[in-house]
Amino acid sequence: MLTMLRRSRFVRGAVAALLAAACVMPSAAPALQVPSVARAAEDFRSNNAELQAMFRAALLDTSQLAEYAPDGTAYVKTGDIPAEWLRDASAEARPYLYFAKKDPDVRKLLRAIIARMAKYLQIDPYANAFTLDYRVWEQKFELDSLAYPMTFAWSYWKTTGDSSIFTPSFEAAMEQVLATMQREQNHNKDSHYTEPELPDGGHGRPVGYTGMIWTGFRPSDDACYYNYLIPSEMMAVVALGDMADIEKNVYRNLIIAHEALALRNEVQRGIQTYGLVLVPKYGYIYAYEVDGLGHAILTDDANVPSLLAAPYFGYTTVNDPYYQDTRRFLLSQDNPSFYVGKVAQGIGSYHTPDHWIWPMALVIQGMTARSDVAKRNVLAEILASDPGDHLLHESFNPNDPKQFTRPSFGWPNALFSEFVMTSFEGIPQIPFGNTDGLEFRSE
Image 1 (tube, rainbow, N blue to C red):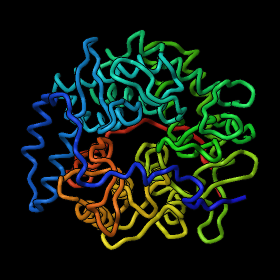
Image 2 (image 1 turned 90 degrees about the vertical axis):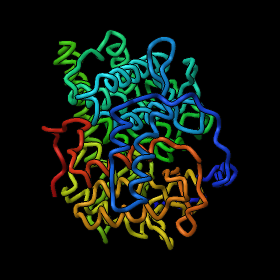
Image 3 (image 1 turned 45 degrees about the vertical axis):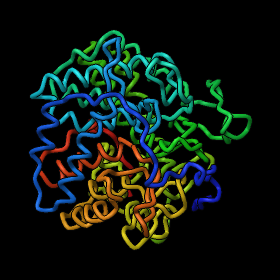
Image 4 (image 1 turned 60 degrees about the horizontal axis):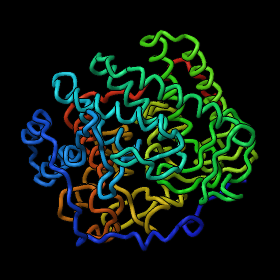
């Protein structure tokens, strides 16, 4: 059964969380001084004054949200919420990889961020967010929260050649990640995880065994409807390849490397077997969620990993025919999360008000576009969404961008700075991983 989601099934009081432009920002720790990043922001010039202002603000945003902790690690809060999400912190730090090879201060900061995430993963691999003092903020099991730190560490290593991040603590975290993924392959039999927001007493709806990894929540922190979330499965495939590379070539643990690759291949077979569905108007497209029992949801969510972002995080290429067919669906009004307004049109989220667009999804749309014209059209919509503070926010009303959620949200600003550098400044994108050798379904 194919399901086209409508918002009424998932909104959990989103309007109550609505933040207007007049919201007062919470007090923050002093901004980190990252000279090479500050110089890059200052040196950026554009004939478009709005682009110049927005890029500068976006690039510096992570330094406003990060701080060194007494234990030598670095904490990166998500923005106006005083907690660090594993996914968000990885994404917020990612643009600084472009400065890490030449700047030892940036490498020091990124090593400290990775070291903290390794500690978090050992405390509770089912938690998605933590506080500065290492308490669990939320225990919503999100598969991408395991994948993101792994891909970020791999990207750091490949960018800088610095393997000093691969400490015994990181190795323990990585093996915790792998064990959790293996356990959740057979959630019904092997897992004891429950969460009150999930149905059936916190266990989630029934699923069949597919080789994929069960996850309770989406990257939006909303509960999954069907618990094989295809974009997160895709990112897990990338992360497992990275983990195998690290285990083999750094820790010299061929047994764990083999386990990671075996799991990667099982998840990939599951995606290609259960994740592709035939839609007469579009052909075979990737579903958003499936249950392995014949049910699938056709939509997408703005948060990354998303279906739209699959080439961005390295699962596939922008020219892949299944991706292109999926993209045509996602960027059409057949997709229930695609919205059209006077200022912009793009993908939103069931996490925020109905028909509001997420700048993050617009950035991903631009980064995965195949033509310069398409990239510039998306850029124009992003610039037009600026409510006056030159920052990207969580979501906005596409008919009135001065109405938006979350006055401070680091993730989309980091993505935007990466978009500008790679799409308009000629800087090659830093890969998330390598999926060579994977088998993809053929017609």
